[in-house]
Length: 329
Length: 228
Image (cartoon, each protein chain N blue to C red):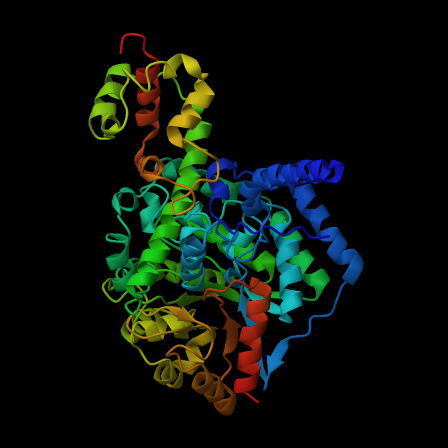
């Protein structure tokens, strides 16, 4: 039986848990995979497709997972994906690594927190020291369940060392993903160019809606600046955030469909408006999905559930999928 | 007559049992994705605003574990200074669009919604700070002189209490742990604004949101000081 935790905090775990993994912990992780393997065997991956479009989920959508570093996190995530009827995902690094994304430098505000430098250093040392078998064990759990991690969501930033960037690419290869999705900034995209070329692996830029900082991905111009740097730099267009920044996702997809790996589907209101249940915000979800279907753009569509609800994340992800299915019927 | 006596005993037992279980109801209330139902109708309205606005995804279901660069509402001084949403409300309505991960705006919220969500945030903060300050109990000795200054100054304890009258023997009446608990939250464990809290207890709940660990240590040192 997979235990569920209501406390969702992925990041807090890093504050009182040493991020280094011992052999015993690696053993526990592998052991946690056993029930999945025993029940489902080496299940065959069957992609979730609606009207020919591959659908997946950004694992951020599951807000009630065990904390980062808890060996039950991946089995719970797998159960949640199966319950949602979704076979592939973009998995957050905080769901793979034991320290949570809090400790890896993306949020500038958290870099100012007391003890942060030490925590960041420990996270870096963990990444450089952990055997790649650690990532292999994670992949095995997904393989056994017939699920796939298609993208690894790592928020590259200036606190990464070059050695750490290299190691993260190696980890991604062992996880079996096709590439990265990354909430990052233009200046970091520039630093990533030699890495994506050397590893022949793409990083897809993910946008938010901060229009004040030109280094952030939030506008067509910011995306276009990165796309011009390398063929291995691509886009994960979050259509909800894009609309919250008063941009038009349909126009962006029409123009850049060849460089968009996946979209994050959420429904936000314009003018930095809130996340809404699908169909209630200003995001043209139906228009976007029908465009991708009708034009046969090779863009994967990933649910990102972030509106408020008293129901479980699994139930809400299912509702989001149902909305998309209806839109494409 | 004997039956009446028996009924009276059963009734009083049931009453006692109900009285005992009243605070526990909150703990045993059915948990949902937004946490545990709040103990009063007003606070439950606030919880509804808080959860359906997805505040909990960034600020935490119980204000612990703020994520994605969001403000730590458990310790943010602005929340401690807020009165009925007067400081929280404008931020909620305008949002924070220039944050790295922007906080959305909720410009259409009514005054009632702002008041409700602020009340719920204060409630969560009072619960959380109580737990934290109780857990900080072995944090070392305080400074009695600083405690006296805080008692008569910022905390305004002197408006209701006097160490020469109602608090005269407080330092010997309770052990350290009990005194700390009484200072932080006098009265029953489940007291919250709007649920059995008189003006004095409301003032204590407000202080509970503002105390630093050192403030509490210093106050305790002052109250236990023989030379106060």
